Length: 510
Image (cartoon, rainbow, N blue to C red; front, side, top):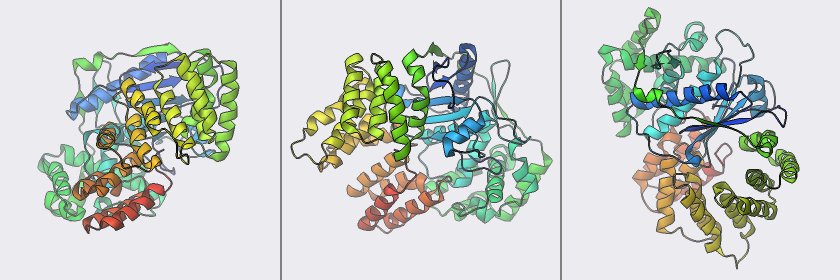
């Protein structure tokens, strides 16, 4: 998501630049684990609102809501302000109001407690969160290679959710935060709006793109004269039609569509959808205070969760070691140390910390995962390595949380690390991992590589589709399209070579 004069956003919640012993609480609901230096009452209300949004969108779209474990929850960190979020994201003041990191190891979001009083038409923290979480839900609901305008239009459509006193949720409200892009900037051409994506677009062009993506999505959703056209358009794309051809067949004369969407905006009579169901008022949230060790480690945890480079890893590891020394009997603190040591490539120390965590709590799934990952790194050049024992870490982790994608992904990775062909069980696990975490780009590329190697070219094309039309990464999108072109030409060797370059490029999930 983008904010006026801003960089690409990704979304959710977090916190930084806070006292080490702040009054941190955790609020756990079905889909979220939220961490904030906030009163339990406020945190309970916030978690309830996020769950209401999730349920309302699922009800409206008739989406399944299968059971999930800890690994399937989105971890949300609430930071004091948008400035704190921006500094966490890029190390300085910027227009970033929140960001979201989609990962098989656990998707995470960082959002502000308040918005620092930016200009009138700025995007609120809630809007940022709901936009990006809509992407999360959309990927869970469809694996179709949807074009950028519809991906962003979908997220903008749901981002303006409002919560009524009677417990209902209003969806599809006007995107007032896009006023600048809609009224003060040039409208994108139909070719730019409906095409495969924008390369090297200016900030103004992107702002206008987001606004008009919302208008077009809203218009095609509500206009009686356009009923059924959006569904037909998606079906044509899924059947392999070129984007512009699909648009012409589904929508008719695109010049007419251009004029009609202008008229729709300027008439300014927007309908919305009201969702009111008993389950919206049956939401369970459990709030608990963090233990002293957990609270003390929160500043380092937030930076580690965000992701660290080599220099940052050293600082985070040093900070985490100090906390771990003060709280040697807290299993979660020791698990955090295992992660921090792993990030600094101290694999033996990472393994030792994971073992300490497991001695304190044998059911700490993420400690098992870091123990296995550290052992994989330590065994990379050891011909006598016991790979069966290493993989046992991931098998045990999977038993502890069968709906967590990460153990399945790491189990599959272990075969490549040992130079062995993955077993059928490992391949099946990889496929299910993608079902559980379709938002993870690196996991998707891993699955595509497996499909290509197995000669399942059509399936590889379908699985790669969301990356080939990714609106958030022009570089990643172009690399994915090179793979797609090779797949369409049935050139397995070229597809694997292009895929290797795409997987190695920066910007993929860890």
